[in-house]
Length: 493
Image (cartoon, rainbow, N blue to C red; front, side):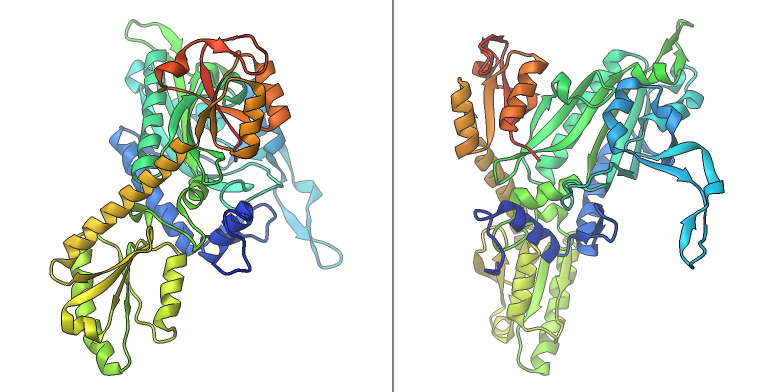
């Protein structure tokens, strides 16, 4: 990385911003708090979408689309929901512009809406109002719907991908005949998110349940996956909510059971967003630039020719076309960069910074020897490989890189999980070596809030899977009162 920019150790925030912008993932938009996702970044997001979308369909879900604009009155129907989002809502009050006296464009005051419209911060209200017309009988259940959309949550202190006023996401909204079915759906989708994070993003996660303070507005229970970034902070990578019958009651969504009785349906919602792009950058990248897991890389292999004469280039072009076709037949995404506007060294640096998993260099001597030079982005190691059976060798290397990135991130996380038994030890650990902290908590919202106010650390989750020693009773680090078990604390994004 250029010396004018900070390393991870020097300034993690500056390092992150530099990676995102210089690797052509995104940039700040003309609208304050919003971002432009550039083609290279959007290609990664598309890979995420495609993988997740298939996972949703494999678990029986269908895609639909609901309006961007939601009547304000809908938010009044579920009190805790509106309270949770009221301060983040963008409100549409008028529906027309007109020319002003000085040639500017102004709002037509006569075109005021009878009822203000909210740009969706999330879609529970508009969707449950719609479901009222879709659900009458147990035969209509379960209703398993997903939506790919954008949302707006008015943020003024923003960071590309991690926190922007507008972002892209998917939101699942399902309706069920029983609470048990809804809970099973909530847990199933949490598992889908964990599977995607670990097997596609190569990011290990801890599955857990949120405390009452941290639940989604209007939910009875919120489940989450928490990932550790390279600065030791936590990033919530996905959430799945058991909504009970709250939204069904608010919007009067009832069904007739097999026994002929009427009851309110049981609901879930779940979502992940372009915040996953930020997690991808922070979990794997280094001081030389972006590092991408092969499964999500826009192209997994870049081939760069090294030549002096046009004759050499023509020969290399012909050989590369053979190599390219054999790799494509394996489903490998390949780019051949034979532009004559940049030297090979410049190209090497560009693709290294953009995190391309494998780089192949081929020149006249390689042609004579039947070899290529292959460079790995994850370890930055180079080796010379015979062209014979190259497609299988490359396929194997990509699999190795995917696994190596996961194991490296897993090792880092596990080395940075600590158990503490006193508040002084807790604060010292946060100060000196942030990471995940397992500590006893008395279960009260008051204690949770005090710890947050004094240290900025939050309870990320109550882990669903824990070692036996962590689920034994103890003493709360803050209040000294009895604690049922340890919970996971961390500083977070």
